[in-house]
Length: 362
Image 1 (cartoon, one colour):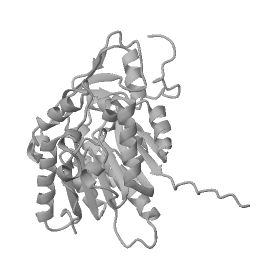
Image 2 (spheres, one colour):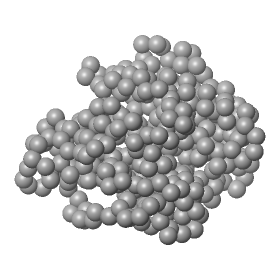
Image 3 (cartoon, rainbow, N blue to C red):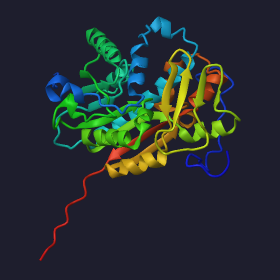
Image 4 (cartoon, rainbow, N blue to C red):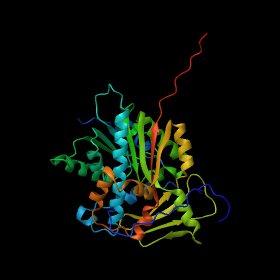
C-alpha cells in the first residue's frame, strides 16, 4: 500500500508500553411503545446489504454471563481496564454536564444510552448520581437483559442500589429517528453515551447522519455526547505493517476484505475478540469526517483520547487513580490485552447554543 491515505495520522508515532509489573501501578417517565408511534414496516428499514440484522443477531446470541463466569474470562484484565476507562469518562462528563444545567432547572441529570447493550454501564451511571436513563439497543435480548439487571439493582440496598429511573426499548438508533421510541419532542437529555458501538453508524453516510441527528435532537444546548470507538488511524497503521488483509494476536483479530481503497464510509472489517465478539462486521470511523458531520448538527469536539493515553494520564493519582486500583486490583494486563486496548479511543462532543437570529434594523 503506497501513497497518502485518508486514515493516516502523521502525528501517530507513539506506542505506549504496557507496565512491566502487576496492575494497578504506583419517577418513571412514560414513553410510547413503538407500535403506537410508527408503522411496523418502518421500525427497522435496512438496505438490502446492511449488516444491522447480522449485528443484532450476533448480540442476541451472546448470553449474559454471570459475574463468576466473567471473572474467569481470558480477557478479564482488558474488560476491567475498559470499564475503568468508561467510568472515568462518565464521571468527568456528568460533572461537566451538571455545571451547564440551567440554574432554574430543579432536576438531576437525564442520560440517553444509545446501544446500551445488556446494561453493563448501569452501575457506573448509578455511581454518577443521575436521575433518569433511557437505554436503546438494536438487540432485543440485550434489552431484556438490561431490564433484568436494572430491576435487580433497584432491589438492592445501600450504595450499590440503582436510585435512578430507567426505560429500555429496542431500536436501531442509526437508522430510525428517536421518535420511534421516545415519541415527538421528549424532554432533552444532558448526556448521550455510545460505548464501543458508534462504528456501526459509519456503514454509510446516511446512517452516520441519522445517528448524529438523533444525538443532536436528544441533547439540550450545552449537553454532551460521549463514547468509545475503534481508532481507525491505529487500525490502518497496523494493517499497513502486514502484507495481508488481517492481523491480531492470541485474543483478537481484524480482517479486511480489501486494502486498496479507503472510503470515508462503509469500510468494513471483521472483528474477533475472545470471550466477547465472534467475527462481527465493523466499520472504520474516519474521525475528521465524524468531526465535520458532527459540526453540521451543532456538536463540537471537546475531548479525544486514546485509551493508552488515558491510562498514562489518569491512572496514577487522584480519584481516577483510586478507582483504577479498586477496579483492577492485582490483575495483570498481558501484552496481547494491552495491544487490543490500543484499538480504542474515547471522545466527547458538546452541543452548541443555537446561533442568534440576526435582525435587520431599518
